[in-house]
Length: 93
Image (cartoon, rainbow, N blue to C red; front, side, top):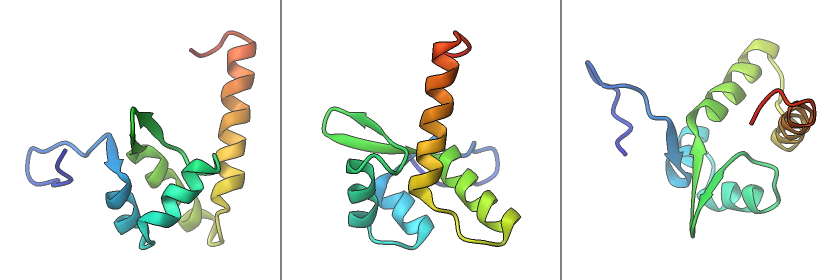
């Protein structure tokens, strides 16, 4: 999937781990490690991981809105808890 967002192109839904790492200006190994520790959002497709573009955008938005540091592990845990709560009450798949 291309990350080009030229005229008429829609933004990507997912980033590869190297693409997400480049956007966040970290090494891809840092993201892989966080994914394996279940502290960074990702989807595993067989042996590959993809990162939801929305998650990267939300992290950036939170950092700019608060003007502070976003703890990705804490953010991921809060997202998991919210999804689990929604599943328990039958609100989301």
